[in-house]
Length: 191
Image: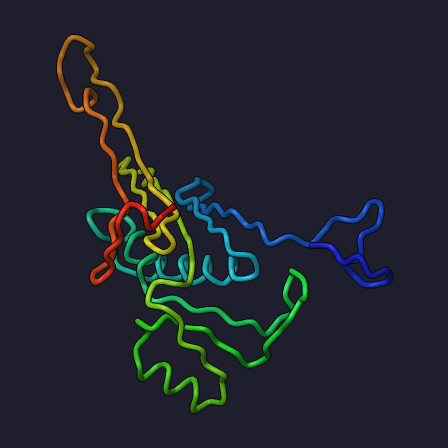
């Protein structure tokens, strides 16, 4: 994400580090990694990841662990108020793009406050995937984004303690991406 025009703060030059939109993230609890998450998406990545992290941190636990899928599936949004990283480096101060699943009262209030609101498709904002581990309980959880047919998390259970004894480790469990209500995709839609 460097600029080829000389003299700017992010102009391409020897010894300079380019600005990048890549922000894979790890969250720690008491110094121990408990959550890894990320998304493609250029300038929207940090916005979508912050929404996800705050939703995970503020939601009640689900099934004994963090509600990763609920946080990913929540209606999302972004703004384009900062100059873009990519040519032509446009910006739209005061703009907000929201998914059509966003509460209509929220959209109306944003407009009342003077924001230029664009309502996008129902599942158009964000491409997050996440994996978490509860260090106390040992619970592993993962979630993938149904938007854009992006991710399929999977996990294999550890092998049985006695190799001669059938147990849960003899099975490989896959957690496949589930389409949200009202979204129906044929396999060819993701190509």
